[in-house]
Length: 212
Image 1 (tube, helix red, strand yellow):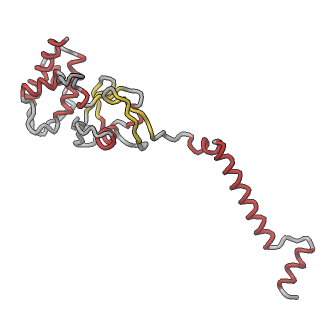
Image 2 (cartoon, rainbow, N blue to C red; image 1 turned 120 degrees about the vertical axis):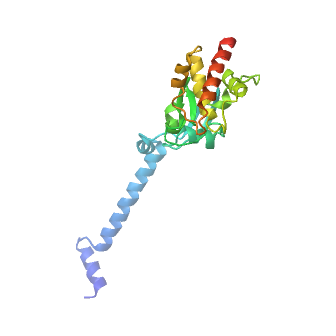
Image 3 (spheres, rainbow, N blue to C red; image 1 turned 60 degrees about the vertical axis):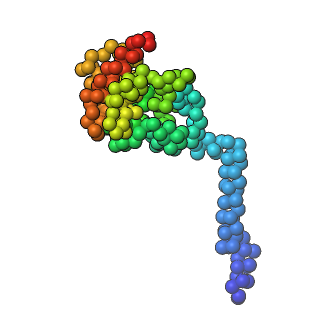
């Protein structure tokens, strides 16, 4: 008997042919796909897929403004500020929380932005060096003190030091030189101008007391 006749005879006797089996697999796959599509459309399937995922489009409070930005899960605040928001006053030096060039204020506390994940500070106030001037354009006492004292040589580290000085004078408007050195110990100056930097910080505290 020819092969085709054998298959037909087998099917007629109620057996499961290869053709029938394949057609059944295809039908089952189509049903599963349709079910997944329906769940996806209703939001049930999508909700299951996104459980534990981190929202990428977030709002940050930076220098008193609400800024919407697309952030990947492991993106650091330094990268977001510089390359997403254009706030290049925040410098990238060592990029491993050692030099302090990336220092910003988060709820008034000086922190390394290169080791802070952007997603962790969504509900906090972030201040960069661009946000220190007041609405009239007047420099912050720390900025003015640095200008008056000529506190830096190459000034690459200046923004980070300035942000740490701001945190210092706001927490302690009358620091000793030793307290100032301790407060700034998390920032490094490649040029080694620490004496002039300390002079600037002491002058900054003096200016801050005058404005208080």
